[in-house]
Image (tube, rainbow, N blue to C red; front, top):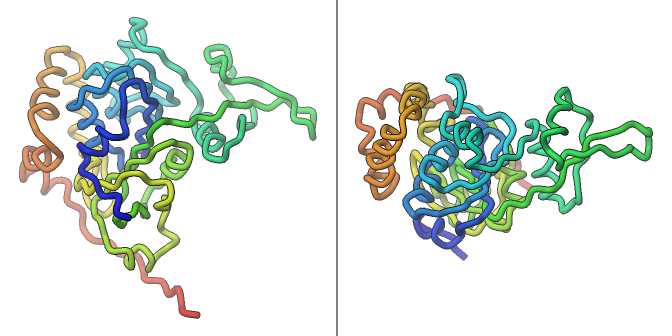
Length: 300
């Protein structure tokens, strides 16, 4: 059965006020278009979880969608602080829960596998244990050594951007693969945004590239350029000037609101957003083809 939706339909159906949302992607293929649609639909009181909040959660916070963040590293990558989220935390306006990178991924692994916790070797940041009561120590029954344990994370919705998938949700990713698989398997619902929806035989021709299977996917949305200002390997580059510009925009409440009014509320969907970015940006972000060598799966 086809799971094709518009992005607007998918967000309306599966994202509700008060939900725990995981927007996946480690620097690569961050689902910004979905975040913008969440803002347009004025979702509220969300708990947003992510190993690296990036600009995507700064935008959601600026729009008043977020009540809590669960995270590891927080920053505007390569630039500096996430000013909006940091300000909200320092003012006590937003709840927060911090882990190491491996701690966040371990939480997803526990959630994906149905385990009550996931053990980890002791980290180099014991101060995290003081700041976060969900990070505990137990004794390894085999060695007697103390290990760190973290609880499972089971988001209400995972949103994952991919290069291509079929109409059922069998989704393929190449380039930098982050926590997309773990987030999808740990979550109650999964929304896929894709650069391309392709025929099933294309997906089946390269099955090892299928990171997320259809059985856990609820909605499939064809949304080209969904990851801008991050990038999608083989489709478009990272928009580094945008990240620099956001640092300046995010210093002013007035500038933030003006940006949201123009680039989120002022466009109806990703197509209008991409068109508005203009030809100069399109050309700057173009990538040249670099094909991998073909492989032969054989026949039997």
